[in-house]
Picture 1 (cartoon, helix red, strand yellow):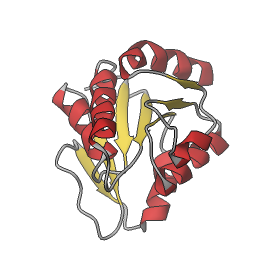
Picture 2 (cartoon, helix red, strand yellow):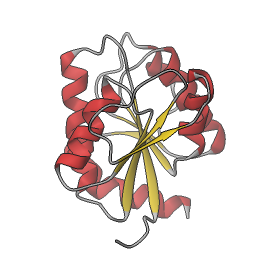
Picture 3 (cartoon, one colour):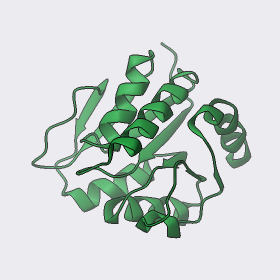
Picture 4 (cartoon, helix red, strand yellow):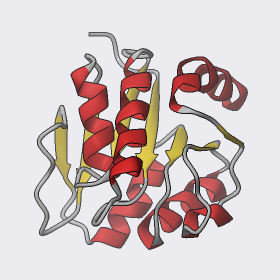
Length: 162
């Protein structure tokens, strides 16, 4: 398998993730799988959005890497789980620092930390789903998209950053 050219981080609600947000995340993973092997998914490796996006990605033949904080177990849909030995907050920052682009689904504090860390680095943030009423509504999205638009949109945004 040729090495991936880009790493796309998928972030959003972990615990107590609503079913409709999990569904969007699965669709995001499945859409990104169309770009594999040029794109590899990176996520926090736990539940909610992370589990659903990894499931969509690996279920469609892509690769999903989970960055696992200390004291947690990886979700079963990851291709690779990297045990960081770091607390949750540091994992959030590492997830943002590992990405060339971030797909942001509705989320709360951890997602907000990851999103702002990515924005500070100047990487594009793509909002997916309805963020009204979520902390993530405050993030500076480069654009918003439906999951089905990602296979065409992601390469364009990645090329702009190169």
